[in-house]
Length: 118
Image (tube, rainbow, N blue to C red; front, side):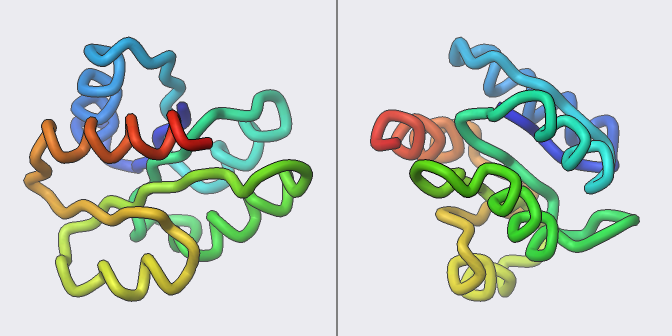
């Protein structure tokens, strides 16, 4: 899995939750680094912050999916501090949206559902 967030603490929290559930996780701090990483690996899922310093999560998701255009769409989960972002996230192709502080049980249940159905 790939976690994209420019805040180190948020990256660490997301990574720790996912690793606790047995996932292999790479973390990056920018959209640019996420795109570079995707040229090397294809993760099962991406967790991306919507407000990144070098791009927004919506544009990043479009670019990531272009890189892995073969096969089923790359599952993606958005994370933000605004609950009102949820509808926009779903309309732009994210399968789920979480706000801080996130509920780790709901988060991991959603991630498990997305990766097991993929």
